[in-house]
Length: 604
Image 1: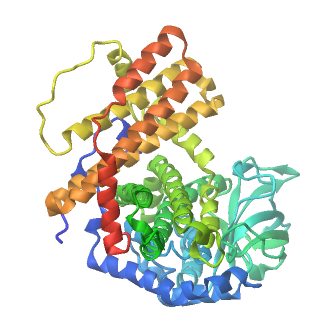
Image 2: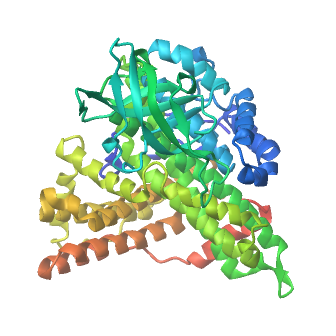
Image 3: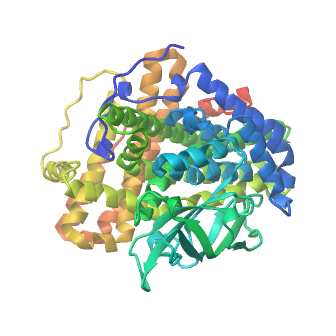
């Protein structure tokens, strides 16, 4: 299949809400090259041969040696160095390729957690913030797996409020070391890590800095103890521990970046973790869906396979629709990041600074995808259990592990509640700084709902013209509610978390629905309409789902603060902006489910 070369465009995070995106401006998974697909196949082959056969052993292992050994094997295949530049022993792949690797390894349960912790939050702080000496010393060993990495941010009293950590670092009298003392918890890979990225506050004369500073700490430095591995609801095989630093002497040259920049490092690295989590969740969801389809085909009741029943077809189709949306949106963001990296490099920025700037710009979309991907996975595993029925509740069937392991993803990388708050907070802050014009369009929508609706029939017969109109109206609904909420509460809006959550849900669904439409439109441009009939079904089902969710979230928000005439006018506007022509969604779902059943696998 030919890949269409697209001209890179300047992208601003959050701009999708007010600016139309064209299919030519996004990347779709169908455009991955043969080389990229081979890399993904290598990852899946590794899981199939090395990880899946020993999942029970991994979950019940009394020591981290099994996971650590698998990490060694992954390192031999180069799976730990996909994002590390070639000069440091890696493969120097672009961001979207690293996203594909995250997806392909995402079905490895506990192993996937260990892998992502090492390659992501364990390695990337050094790659993006380390100086040349630090990169030369650590990255080659991390890329091969000779050394394993862990990330030490969370403390017993600082979870979501990461900058409130109490771990302290005091410069020794000779000025050669920092003595680090403190407790970190929920540290993935803690039991076998050779290198720790540790966040602490530098203390002088009994006064601690306001902001964190990051340090690279080797286990060999000493002064490090740890508890036994935690007993967890899921991902039982990932090694998660409390780590104690007791006057651990860290050479001053192991400070990462500048003093007081630790919180900025943590936030930017979390942006990467969020979008990569969405990709990994997608990989896990695809595996669960494959198992559910195969079981539904094999399991017979009343003399026929349960896959022939409408209730089961509904579940399979809805699973597919959610995953297709996550996939469409995740690789859209990934390519946007790659394009921005190239744009910043062309302006003279360094490779590391370009990547950091691109990720900072698209932090809103990263948060959106973290929420969407983790919640789609949770939906998929829940329905997977239901399709398996009684066997789904048995620890001998695969749904047991999938169900338990998926739950952490709504907590990892900032809870979904925190990420929802961040989506709206970042949008509003960018609007106040003039980075994007949010309030102008919001005020225009406010005037529009007071005008007479346009009942004329559109003569636009281009592809998805009606659906794009629906999407445009959904954006108006979100702008209307956001604008009214800002006017009502002003600076106190941050105290209205329920309303912010409603707004976030509207924005998330709009972004996902738009991504699906853009992907299918581009597919049709590449492959033709006939080859995309089922993909059009996927897009229409998701758009109808988005309309319903935007309406519900909008209504919940409006009724939380509007009264009397304002309430009636806004509800009238919401109704106008959440209209969509009814179609037979049952038949559309059945067409999708029949394809899955016939292929005996997820096939989109």
